Length: 152
Image 1 (spheres, rainbow, N blue to C red):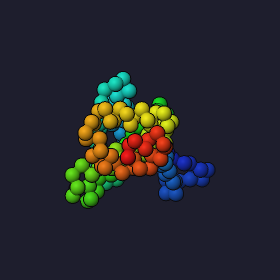
Image 2: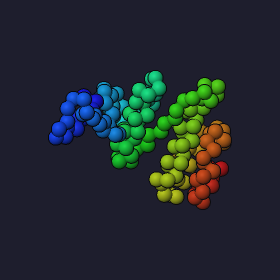
Image 3: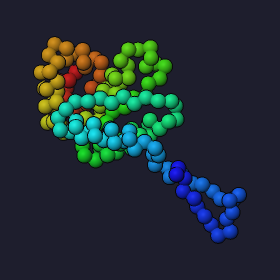
Image 4: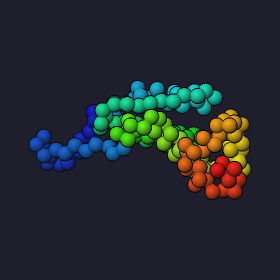
């Protein structure tokens, strides 16, 4: 059931109140399992992306936020972006925005040494396109550690 009944002495069916559990996601066990399984695969070294869609109010954000807590506990990163009218007029806006936010998450959780290592790996992977990547991700400027100045 979606609600827990709170029964008080003297309550009748007419004056009984139903209370829902705030923060509890109902009816999304299958989706939670699919996403959790994908995260387990990714933590073993594969790469995956999950896009969640649906009508307004159907629980997409609640689903992501509930799983985000689990991912954070084990040191993973879960990024999200709500697609809106702006996203529809700018190709890849949502994906770029989500990865831009990931830059901040990485900065907040990393040491200067780790940030320097990440910058080096990105330079090696992207080569001549590294500067383009940095222009697409403006939050790299918030990574103020001296070891990360090479990102600019």
